[in-house]
Image 1: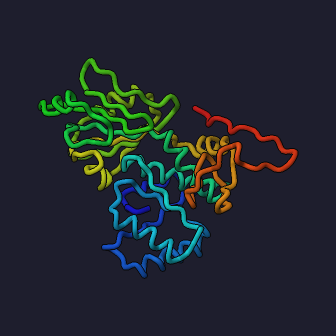
Image 2: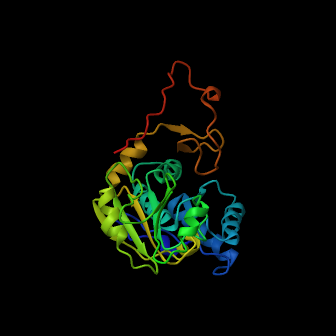
Image 3: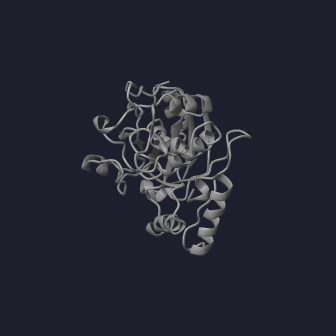
Length: 288
């Protein structure tokens, strides 16, 4: 992980913590290479998850370390989720890391699990928000004192002006827990209105990630993420997807792209199957 505040507490005694990959201004390149070498020696593989809002120099550092070590055992996963959503995803991958999945499956599971995280925020203004398309009329409303907007960045972008007669954004159709991180806003709308509307089973609170104000365009926010908390459900979800072998690096994968070398899975008509073996389509992930 590239930010300490994106490492949520473990869900149980078995869930491992995450290693922190320091930015260039906090650690010399030689030390970063040494730390990564130790991680590889201890664990065999490293799955490094980082948000799209990471500093370019920090991202270049990750690729430099992997290049110097000439290792094909380091997966660099850039995740297009809000910061709290990234933190939730990282903890889910930490949960899966103790299961009987190969490193390739764990790495490629990040893209799958991202579709089951409903990540958003309650914002006091959308004037500087550009992650979800905002029309001029909504921008104009954001200047009205007391205005609030509920924004869901994924899996489907939504933007709703909060009001007594307005319905909350559409939520997940499966049982979830809700993680909340408050910024400068002290609004209870997420707890009192959104959580019941989404029928969440439990609410948890975390510190607001340091990258959240920049990601959302304001510090006056309450960030939230609805997610699958149960490791047995996560296991079933990942297990239900057909496994393939990467034609480039040979790692196991699920989905359409290798988590380690980023090579896309060839089209079905271009893949070779052993003689006498029928090709079965990948089952759809369970929805609940």
